[in-house]
Image 1 (cartoon, rainbow, N blue to C red):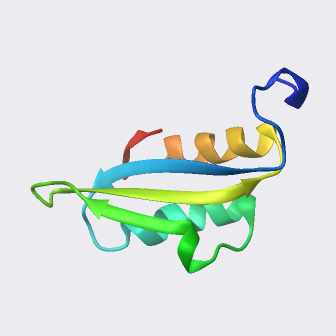
Image 2 (cartoon, rainbow, N blue to C red):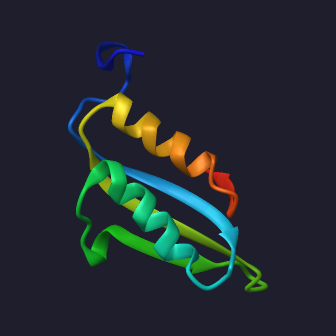
Length: 88
């Protein structure tokens, strides 16, 4: 989908929420995947929250999206990652 067909106006701040098991390294895995396509992130761009039981972890990364293609590439990469259970 070309950027002109997207309801988003680029560049824009874009949050992506990734859920997986609360295991060592999950946050770092998500951040590394986003950095592959979005470049550097600062500490305030990354937030995580465990589930009520502590079994799962939700990691939200907010980055500056430059295009729909960039956002799609990040979604594809994270979706193909075995540790990722759910992606918004």
